[in-house]
Image (cartoon, rainbow, N blue to C red; front, side, top):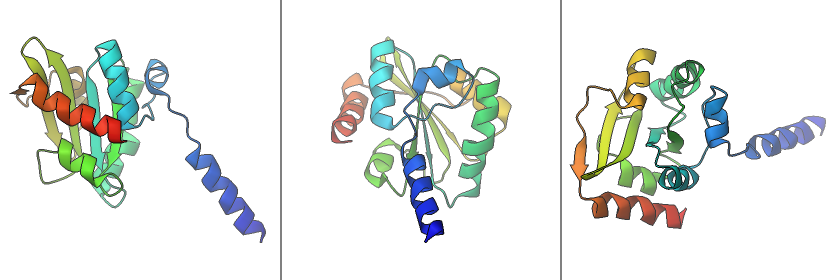
Amino acid sequence: MMSLILAAALQAQVAAVPQDGPEAAAKNRVPRTDYATALKRSKASGRPLVVMLGADWCPACVQLKRSTLPQVAKLGGMKGVEYAYVDIDRDDKLADALTRAESIPQLIRFEKTKKGWARDLLVGAQSVKRVAAFIRGKAEPKSEEQRPDDLAAVLTGWAKDS
């Protein structure tokens, strides 16, 4: 009985994880923010939106989420962007709308440019240095320039449904 009560208390505590976007980045931590909130903050602030697509069963995703991104954050690499994690199993429709590749983990960086939205994609296990450069917008992948209406419609459509 006692273990059941402890398990319930632990679940309640984990479920109550606060949304802490920019505040966490300022303290050199990876923000814990849902997609809709990060999107809203990105639009309001003009900062790029970085989204990680992953799953708990994927070793490379777990490595990126629990080790690589925290190391990038400790180096100040999460400052200046809004960040969200999307679990492909829990938010499969959102993940399908965002993804452009067949494998995970994926980091997607959306940034508003003079020509519309630019989208960069980084797929697979990566070094801290490569992830930090990608988040800063200095990665090797080329941007996919899209009409602003196309990407904005996808993004805002999911934000309303979330």
